[in-house]
Length: 98
Image (cartoon, rainbow, N blue to C red; front, side):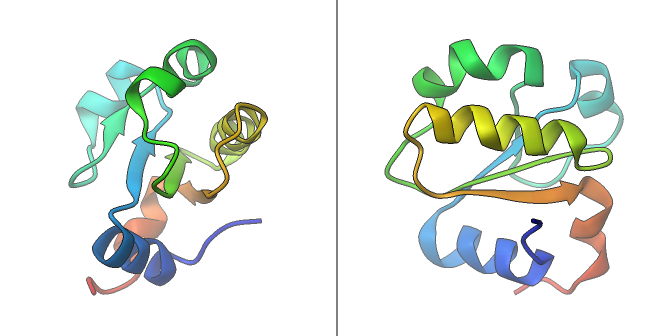
């Protein structure tokens, strides 16, 4: 299940949600979303807890939504309560800024 981009932008603005790009560093370098941090999927299970705040919502995304879905499941297994999947980073550009 994906979070609509309007809702994701609202969570960032109103709840200080953390925007996490789970693509590779090379993909991240080619196209970044404003305010996003890069934690590649292969690293999320071992560094997610040390970088991300469990008290704040987390919005994950990638190129297609598949890796971000896996990242969401990993974070939820680490007791992150508020994890949302934006899906593709392209979704970000399909709605207005809030």
